[in-house]
Image (cartoon, rainbow, N blue to C red; front, side, top):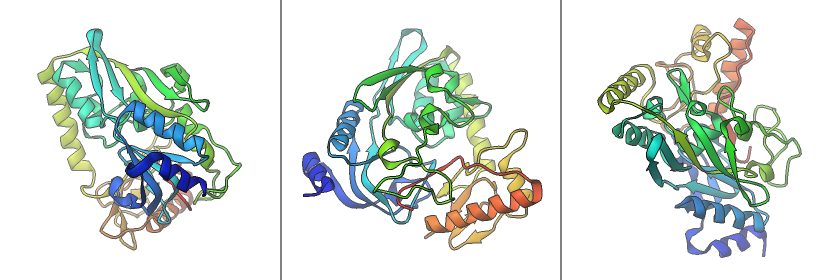
Length: 324
């Protein structure tokens, strides 16, 4: 019996083989998962990850699927859909959220209680765990600004308590996102789809965010909701609707990736059924039936054009995952 089959048996009927991952991503793109399970709480997430490790199977945790491009060939090993969504409020503006809590839900619940700081998240797809890994943000604010601590499952199975300083936040990155190994594994190639070093499949799940605590300031609920409405209206005006992925690239210092792509004449350019949005050039749209390969070709086109015209090397903000 191979390790994947042994893991399937250990997880029982909840583990499903050959599930299409496109239904779990905002771009509606992605191949099949070898094995998929939904984690319903932080403790359940911890137990599933530990079970996968026990059987020597790499595990990929997917939250909102907003900042990943899943390969057409799918994901080897175990894919865990994070539905750990318990949310608790305490005196002094302290909020504890499990890592699968959806960001707009977190923002709305906080604003309704007069807690300020997370209004920026009202229209941002994704989960608390993903926001911590990539230091998500918008409208001049980010996750690091109000995070007090994160509870992280470590490589040895212990639960670590990391402060914002411990997480080493940067622009759209953190200690959790920047750990990269070039050793490769039997589950995937050493190099990513763009020829860069990719996280090793056996190390990708070495640290898993289970939950987080935020400390928020007092605010007026009506004023906070009004600000959130403004943010949502701005998002509707400036970003494409429907199935899409973005921001695709990080903004280079002193500039905006979308402006550079637009100035390179690429708005509306298509490969297959994928399009560089005519609304915002740093978002790529699935017109219906787009593949990850289509999107990768658009990424190559955009990076090449911007490099030639402006001498700027665009760096991906999204993360390609799966078997490339």
